[in-house]
Length: 393
Ligand SMILES: NC(=O)c1ccc[n+]([C@@H]2O[C@H](COP(=O)([O-])OP(=O)(O)OC[C@H]3O[C@@H](n4cnc5c(N)ncnc54)[C@H](O)[C@@H]3O)[C@@H](O)[C@H]2O)c1
Image (cartoon, rainbow, N blue to C red; front, top):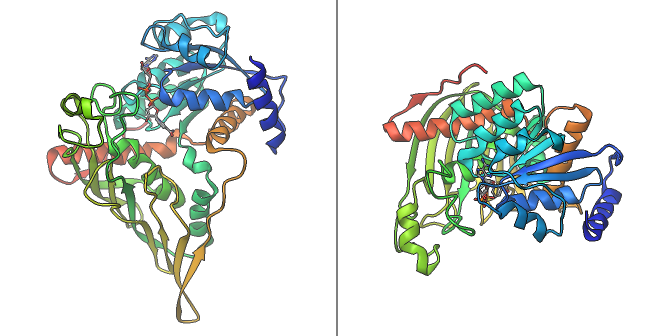
């Protein structure tokens, strides 16, 4: 470990409120060393009880260059893929971060759980519902921690939504409108792994749709989804004139685009709750609307963010009655503390691995998130409403 990373780690250790046993190290491997792996690695290096021992990528030399760019030497990277790395028992891995594109999430998670290591799996959970179920079966058999990488959950503003629902201020929730989106925001900053079917499998629906679903479903206790009527389109992604692509790559990217860039759905949830969903990577509109939760005693408006990333875009407003008077209460934004969301995501995962406590973002909750995403994709293909059938884990 470098002096620079040691200094960062000591800084953070001082800011942590929970005691960390720095003598008890967690031996970490990173699977997939692209864009998001960078955020994982930085956050691991802030922790006093981590040893980064290995990493791998399908692209030869990428993992080695990745660790070297962070000034790390001695990290083993001479593996063709995740399976080779996981088979190397000399690493004595405790846990892995899976930072591959979506299509590889399920396979890598299953390999890692079968190899007996804890798993922090990037979002979206998987591409299909069946894959999620397979991963959960491997999780159950392994007894290891599996946490899904939804860092917005650790944002106090997001936690406030759940606190408001739990307080009873909304009464019985019966209708939710959720989603958000970007006007021109198809993600191609480092190539095409988000937009090709072969690597991504799902587009805006999974990439940012999973966040907007989690924002409201977590708050209301993740009721089971029953039926869905879904729609997806790809108007912008497949257009060679889409201005969000680099000018010299428009034609090539448009040809490669194989996922959705917009999705909408009408979902029935257990408990008589309706979920009205829309999400967009690109559209001719600034926002498809704020997120709203309607209940018998109150309604909550959660403003959208411009670059939809699953967080609260401004002060929320509670619409309710006080002694018969229609009243609006503004809930101010809670400013972020010194510890960033990625640091919290990594810390909470490490704590679960070390202490045997539950996964910070458990698969059994995100299973319903994935079931809705899968249902929207299937219903859109069939052009009609379908029942959501969730296989037994
Ligand atoms: N939580 C967040 O805020 C956030 C932000 C961005 C991306 N993500 C998620 O992270 C994932 C990765 O996104 P990215 O932008 O880093 O993608 P990327 O394409 O930049 O990197 C993925 C890397 O994984 C490698 N890979 C794929 N399968 C592999 C395997 N079996 N073994 C070893 N390496 C393998 C690829 O070669 C590639 O280098 C996506 O699922 C995305 O949804 C999360």
